Length: 132
Image (cartoon, helix red, strand yellow):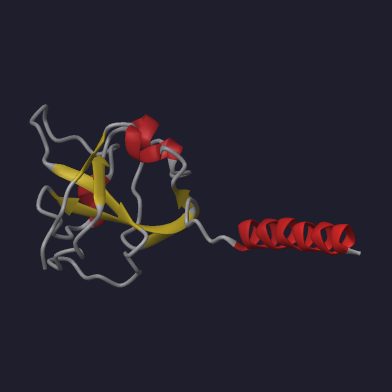
């Protein structure tokens, strides 16, 4: 009788552990909001992040900022919440890693599903904190 009790207890523990692992919300894949902003995380007109636009050979300090904390609706001039990451607006590889178009304009407040944690941040982005 004792061995049957031990067997059932260990079976229950294994099932419980497996169930907890299946319910674990690791947040490896979260939705993310994308914005065109300057180096300080201040939202600018999305036309500045259109890599089809010519700037006459000068270096343009605009970036596509992203974070799971960003929601649609931040207006031009708004400082994005702290904790976002950025990549150069014309970094085709980074854009594609997030499921964004490789070229062209990306609308401010664009939400992409299940992108944070896919490794897109490793391609040409830098982690940066912005205050607000």
